Structures are given as structure tokens and as C-alpha cells.
Image (cartoon, rainbow, N blue to C red; front, side, top):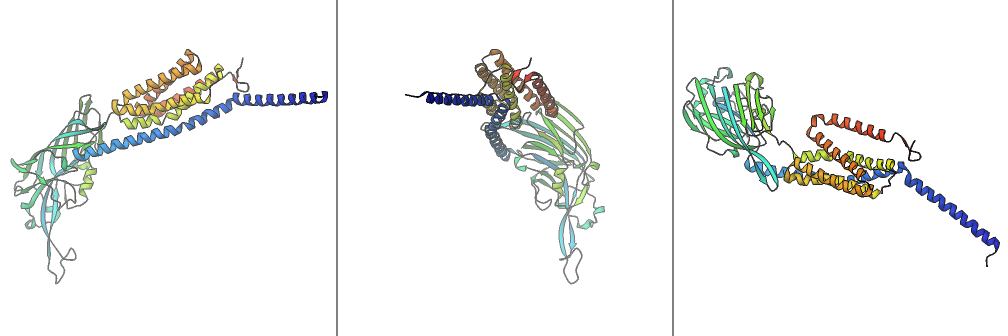
Length: 468
């Protein structure tokens, strides 16, 4: 049986224990109600969700690499970007050289070597027409084209007066006409040259001159006995990615016609005239030799073909929407999306006196991350635009239904769903209007910050209550 003194001690101990438990409870409640800690927790969750985002980004890169491999495989078999340089008239001549220097050496026999002089056309007309189509490798779609090319123009008889060549050493019977083509494997038909009304057949280029450049060549032999050489030739060629020409005439007139509706004109010269619509484009160039960095004639230069392929004009056949590039760009905005969605839920906690668990935030954030994976997987089959809106609609529906359960209010769920829909609409605007992305992004963030400041202007952050 306990004595009064023991009962007093027990009561005292219980009182101390109760006070300690009460203080501990108040501390726990204070921590749970601390908005600073809530913000820290939300930030931690947003950072934690960067792990699946990094995995999704890696998947985008992997799929893009597979697409590039499919493009390379098709291009290797169908034809790569085509760059055409020519025609170039080549006439060889004999030169006497010493065995050890450029002058005759006493007591040593002279050596006779062959060098080459190259001449360009006085007038050159290029007419190119492409039929653009797609080839498939698995689920990947690769744009390619068939080219119908017509070249015509006029050469003046080669003048060696300014080149210091002895007329008797000129080998007129070995003259040739060359057309350099970056990927001659893609020639699909027999190629012939009409020179002064006489038809001659092209052969693979001789590698004796112009280095290892690729192309086709026709031997003119004794066809340079007139003051002017009129020529024309037609060529059927396949290619992909782009089509470019070098302005190899003293006056060059070129036209490209295609059924591709999204051209990107590139090179050292833009078209003088162009028209583009949904059915394709037409473009015309008029280029004088004064704008080039090479002359009308020169002695053998191994670097010429490399120089000429840099002095080109033409078009790249770009895809109107690069699926992987658009998905990659959209992933860059993911942290902003997560932060704004979490801030919306947090404002409901602050203003609506609703308590949400960390798992609620985590699941909502997981849904936002899933959007990018859905976008990628659907875009490979349906195209980017359709995939974007389908993925966005699915995530908006998913998040709205989940928020209806955790926020316990159709109105609040509708607010969250509407806000997420506005975010996806805003992101799409940024993606398709790249020139104004920075301006639109800055204004959007300003308006969002202003809205948050306005909604929380009366919050007593010390007591987490609405001030009256």
C-alpha cells in the first residue's frame, strides 16, 4: 500500500511527464505547421524527381541516336547530301622540268611531265527539280529525294596566253569535261553530254587531277577546235538532307523546284526569287563570278574541290517539326512545371487550410514527369503535335481526378486542372515560337510571381492564418 508521500511523488511525476509530452507534441505540431519546412520539403521533392527526369532525358537521347543511325543507314544506301561542282573543262599540257628542281640541271636529262589547266564556262544554266519522299527504317521516317538535273551553257575556247604554256605542248586530244558530285553512287541513269550537237557518254572521273574528289568525266578529244563549245547534259540523281551547287560559270543562273514545303535556303547566296507554299517551293539564283573566291581558269590545284564545295548555294530539306529536338526542348522546362504545380498545391494548403502529405506532392510530380515519356513514345508514331496534345490531355485528366480526391473539392480540382492545362498551352507556345521564347518565358514568370504575391498578400506567415 502506497503512502501519501509516494502518491504525491507519483502525481508529480505524471505531471512532469504530461508537461514533457505536451511540449513534445507542441514541437511536433510546430514543425508540421512550419511553412518554411514545407517549402524545404517541396523543394527536396522537386529535386528528387530530377532522377526520373534524367532517365527520361537519357531515353530521348538514346531514341534520337537510333533515329540518326537509321538516317545514316538510309543515306548510305540511297544517297547523301549532294553537292555538285562543275562542269570544269580540263586541258593537259607538257612541261619540261629538271629532275630535282623547276629548272634544267646541268649534266642531267630533262623530264617531261604533264600538268593540267582548268577552265570554267562563260555561261551556266542549272535547272533542278526534286521529288521528295520518305523512306522507313522500322518506326523511323527519313526524308530523301530524287533529282532531275539539267545543265547547259557555253565554254569559250581555252586561252593559255596568260598561263605561260607553249602552244605546241598543249594536249588538245586529251581534253575532258568533269562534273564533281559528292556522292556519285546515287546516279540512277546513264549520263550523256551534248557538245556542239554531238553526244558523248560520261565515265567515272579520272583521279589524275583535282585530288580524290568524286564525280564523272567525259573525254572531249579533238572537240575543242571551235571558238565556242555549247553543251548540255541531263542527270538523274538521288540524295537526302540537302542539295547544293557551286556557281561555276562567269554568269550562273540556277533554279530549284521541289514538292517539299519546308525549305531552308543556305549557302553563300540566297535566292533572288522564291515562292513557298503547301505544295512545295521554287527558287532562282543569278550569280556573277565577281562574288566568288576562285577565278575562271587555274593551273592544277589539289585544294580546289574543297574550296569550291564551300562556295555553294542551295537548300536543306528540313523537317517542319523535329520530334526529338522538340521533346528535348520541352524537357528543359520540366523543373519550372514541377515548381509551379507544387506551388499551386501549397497555396491550397496555406489559403484553404488543407493539409497534404509529402506523398501527395510526389505522386502529382510523378504524373508531371510521365508527360514527357508519353510525349516521346507517342510522337514516334503519331507526330509531335498530336502526341503533345494527347499526352497533355492524359496528364491533365489524371492530375485533376487525383486532386479531386486529395483536395476534396471539385472546384479546387478544376483550378488545378485548368492551371496545368494553361501550363501545357504555354509550353507549346514557347516550343513553336522559338524566336519569342525568351520574351514569352520572362513575361509568363513575371505574371505568375505577381499572382502568387497577390494571393498571399494577407497571409500571416507567423501564424499561418489569413490576416483580417
